[in-house]
Length: 373
Image 1 (tube, rainbow, N blue to C red):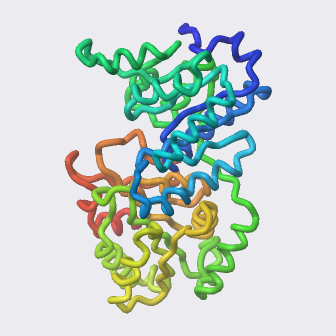
Image 2 (cartoon, one colour):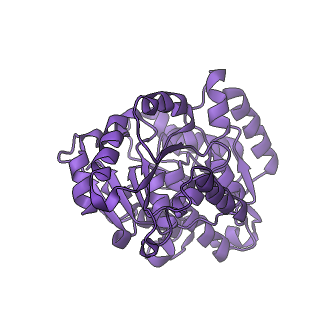
């Protein structure tokens, strides 16, 4: 049995820990289970999380979107997270955050960064010059001297790609990280995603449906009400998106079927693309379809998802949140990262591209309709 990396004696006496991670919503959907398990195992330790913005830039035009990153709303509601560093989207604020973190005098810092782990090893040590620092360490050639020197700043390290068995779900990978670091065991049931939606946002979703005259949709299909289908064609990178033309074709094809003729559709749009999406859909005459974007608060999204009968999404946070709110999902995925498939197999249908090199746009409307049958 492999010994845990974080010394048990240190875990007993420390009162806080800093985790450094470049978190996306999909990451946190499963990592939050690990943070919660840590909080249960060590209730005397306060969890602080440094959310590093990999899109950090001096371009002031990008700051409003980076500043309003939806994950911050979710983290703020987590009862097991005591402090969040979220001002890392500009170089100047990044440096200010380092000074703020140094003043905490952390005795234990853990980097969970898989992208550019040498850089984050140095950041962890910079924040905690005298503390115990653990992090990711990927194989590096002896000729990559800068990487080797960076990894020497860690008191303990592990290769994130070699801790878990190959081919397991990403939730099992994260669980293996925390087992290696802290000796925390978990079950498959404890890795299922969850989201606690504040009541105000549940109310918001119902009121929004009423404003759209969609209040007759959603809920239990046994009520013989019109179906409510949520379609998310957007991902962070354009190559992982589903073309909007494909969304129009899917809605039209479904409306032609007796089963779906009265269906209401919600199309999710990332805030920065809303203006373009509106212009696109305005060119079509499609009844009972509304564009949606969680522009005010993250919880607008899961609250709206919970009202739906079906979710169709590309491989991004929405398809994982579908499992968290217990709504059936059709996931449109590449072959490249099967470990990121929705974890709730009973309520998920995964459509993968035919070839490994294909992007999501290679998935056809006919494939989605076949899955619905």
